[in-house]
Image (tube, rainbow, N blue to C red):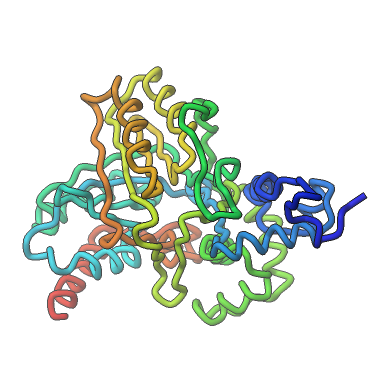
Length: 388
């Protein structure tokens, strides 16, 4: 028989493990989102008990975001290591924000101690080569003095490894020597799906904050995008298109504490709690790639992973565990050291965005990318930024 909610917390009389229970809930959230009644049904617990656990997440300001299936949206991840020209050094932040609106940039971060930036973009699958030519054209214009692109077959944000987090104390609790191995099998690639504007707006809203009810999402779309969509229509699209066509890869409990600003369309994060790090491996063999995926699959604080001909992983190492984390990364890199580059990231010079949903053309049912038109807009943007 289900225990009353007041007995859900661990006490001497009730030795139930609250961390274990919350971790179980987080695993279910990663599959279906924060649907408390359905999670309670799946795990055989009272919904008020599960709601109590869920409030523990809220106490830590853990948002819930969908994991976007970029490939199903017809987008492909490109990550570019760039160095900005001297004329642009003082305008990097507004330039990156504008490039999210204009040309599919979804995030950037400055590396330490190098004076390089890592720029992430989710680009229309059919326009990858044109996009690379556009980046090279920007390099020719002096926006970048260096531009080294990596093109990946698939990208994913990694669900929270809740078994290794202490929700009562609000900190990670793991021993790398005891970590279980991860999965080294690449997931099957998703084919681009048929989309419409409602699907794209829904995925965007779930990426921003998946904790909201459909009515709240409906209101946000109306206020932020000026589109008034019938409630029943939204529910149908959510079930039949967004979920039915696999436009999501699941949900992530946002343990880094990043928060999203609806008005600016960008994410901020808590400073100093984590040390950001990124590892690039150029052209690993199949065996080397499998080992990299297996090793990073053991590391609880991996934030994202991208795999193709090359390999990329982004991590957020708890500040108090930085030495252990660096030792593990050193071990991971050892067999591919001559193919690898590793950076610590300056979180004061970093931001993340939604995918560039405004570039979806409803009439054409395709993502816009006109290189000549884009370059004209970019030249106007340059003048605008430099006049700031």
